[in-house]
Amino acid sequence: MDANLSATNATRAVYHQVVEDAREASGARWVQLTGLEAGTRQVRQVAWSSLDLPPLRAALARALAAVPDFLPHRVTFPATINPAVERIYLAGEVVSAPLVQVAEGAVPATLVEVAGALGGMRHVLAVPLRWSGRVVGALNFHTPEPASASQGRMCAAFARQVALMLENKALAAATRRQVRELRVSRARITQAEDDLRRSIAEELHGQIQSRLLVGWIRLGEAEAAWESSPGRARALVSEVRGDLAELRERDVRQVSHRLHPAAIAVGLLPALRSLADRFHPSLEVELRVPDATLAADHPTGGRIPRDVRLTAYRVVEEGLGNAVGHGRARHALVRVELVAGALDVSVRDDGQGPAGGPPGLGLTLIAARVDQHGGNWSLTGAAGQGCTLRAHLPLLPPVPSGREEEILGEVVFDPLWDEAPLSSDGTGRERQGMG
Ligand SMILES: Nc1ncnc2c1ncn2[C@@H]1O[C@H](COP(=O)(O)OP(=O)(O)OP(=O)(O)O)[C@@H](O)[C@H]1O
Ligand SMILES: [Mg+2]
Image 1 (cartoon, rainbow, N blue to C red):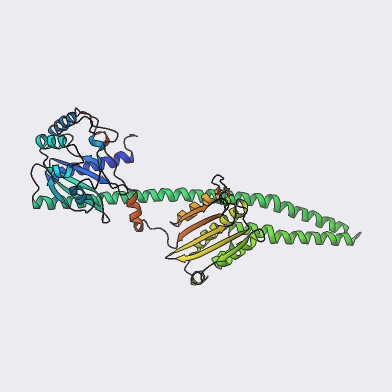
Image 2 (cartoon, rainbow, N blue to C red; image 1 turned 135 degrees about the vertical axis):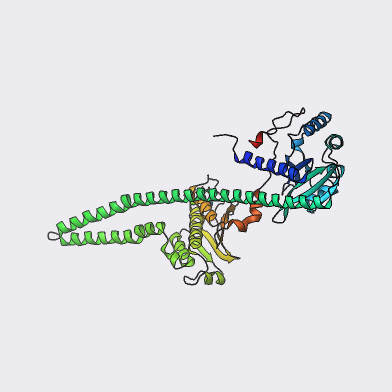
């Protein structure tokens, strides 16, 4: 398999194609694709057209010889560097201006002069690229003369198509990433469920079976003593009854609860109450739920889906377990509240604060479960002030198109020349990315 066919190289090839097509369609001498980084508001070079045209290579080589420190593939500048650049990237305007104006402060003046004299690049028509209304970069058409109104319209239309195509590609990539992440968290949950089943099987096979066996032996002894010493037989039978009662009350109930908290079917609140009881008296659990949330938790006609209830339950279960086990807490406050289409759940304990242990299976699983709902979670706390485990669980499953802002925020243009700088004689390996 060709190692060059990586996602990054594929993306670079797309950027190259865009600038070459843009040059072809517009008749410009040179087309340049730039990206705007959302956070830093830095403008970066992404791709240049025409690298295979001898006059351009010669002009570039001359320019680079004149300014030896200049690395064209590393050009970055703030979007506020001059008024023209500000208009393109911050105001999102189409700008048609002499190159000197647009390049002022961003590129050495000598280079601009050489580009004008040898490459015929004296004017630039810069068209911002927008994704969901936000400027993410620009297509810059370089020409000897200012672009006419009809050329300007054509370039703007072309840039709109490019923006749409790149946005679709980015959304598709983000969706693929989400699917991958979802697979990973599913695998984690499956693994945890396997572990749980194994531990329950061990418990059934070990503890519970051996206690049943002891009961069976005791009943045999009772049977043998029935005639000869009825008093002892009665004592044995009553001992077995006590054992069976404990087995039923504690072990079997606990096992079935670990498999699935049955009370969830009735509502989250009843399930949490019975969970809180399990921690009594080592941990006092206070449950705080607003009336509106109580109503939404109603078993019939309630608005909280069953899987959200179950995840909320698991969060509280892990939070209380950790509060006792790691924080040595005596009191915990559990809050459950429905806010704007999501369920907020938190467990605040009065323990010692973060115990500083390595991340265990408990929180890893919480992360995976919360992730499945498209929610988020956190564990915060300070020494001597206890810990708070919080989860925010949207009631509806995540829909990729509803997260455009988040997706776009993650997308950055790949700098085309990062690995293949152009050498000053113009013979660099700059076309490698096109594979
Ligand atoms: N309420 C808490 N108080 C103090 N430390 C906590 C608390 N909750 C979590 N921690 C810290 O975070 C670590 C990770 O917790 P996590 O629940 O993932 O694992 P664990 O409880 O150690 O193991 P597991 O949950 O698999 O039985 C813990 O080892 C502990 O150091
Ligand atoms: Mg834990």
